[in-house]
Length: 355
Image (cartoon, rainbow, N blue to C red; front, side, top):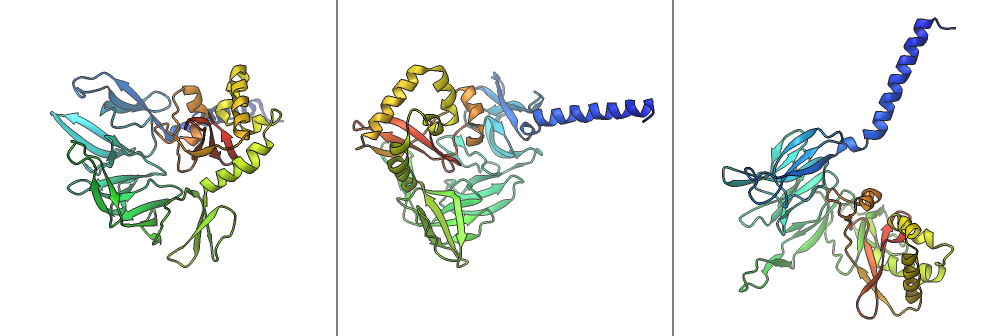
């Protein structure tokens, strides 16, 4: 048996280890994020609330003097786009957690909202009209040169690029500055800028980049669309439009019942069903309407506002609490009046009713 002094030391070490373990469980996952907060500050920000960031323990990591509406981040993970106002001037740049500023006045912005990091990368714009697009990593290194008309966000380490297109102004004489591209060539790149697929024409296809499979021969699995890569291999992706059509026609409408309805519900609805029996009745009526057929479907958006739902769906959201639709597309059933009556989200365990 150990002497008393050694027993006490062992007990203290165990208690210390236990406390450290609890701290890791409580804060380990959330430590990678800093969280947005806002304050009124007419000196540094005369047009809106000022934006800052705190860690999970409430320690201020970035003081609140950034323009709030242009940065939609609710969380700061690795890199963020910010605009500050000082000396009667606006200044924009990217900032990482080491305090490094880069891409000064070269932010990728759409409809007055800055880009949001995805998978540790963020887009930037250069040129007279800021219409040559490239990609930074979180250290500020250019990983894709700014020579493209457009770049998608990074999805599964892949980027869809458009090059050689013509810029077409819309409503030229109506004071509108909206525009779009025509022509050009779409390519699929990796996050080093390497061209994986030279002609990535995915028009009229709902390809999910997170379903990538690379094979030596054409992949003949159901719903897959194949492209021959620059390395000679075949890159295939699931067309979720075809996949969802099959799900509705040969799974949902034939198999759903009161007994197994819970298996078709997304996590946000399971608690709703338990609390709101009227909602359950309305849902059953809608399901019966869908079973009668003659309905169409299309992709749709979905907004998350309630804190309870945000917490439930956090694995499906980006750092602005927006659904990552490229990974988790949402399809809505449309009735004969053109109204969405029920919507489903694609998850790792099938399509689930989300609304």
